[in-house]
Image (cartoon, rainbow, N blue to C red; front, side, top):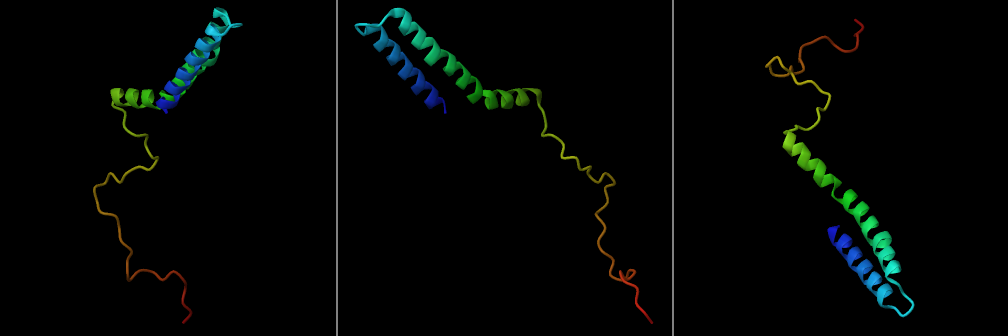
Length: 95
């Protein structure tokens, strides 16, 4: 996605250059084109594109573990109980 950002800035620089060198163009128009079509949208796009990378780096720097799942592990140290074969019948049998 950074390729899109670089391409966008390249196009806006060319637009500003065309505005500045046009017979009826002006340097103020070229500067406005560069700022409002290039730098401001480019800064916003760069901020949003690099947000995930910044979050990942800050989480790595803090040594954060993944968020807890809400399930508490079995802290007893015993194996989980298996179903009993000779237990009570789930439905009462009539004699």
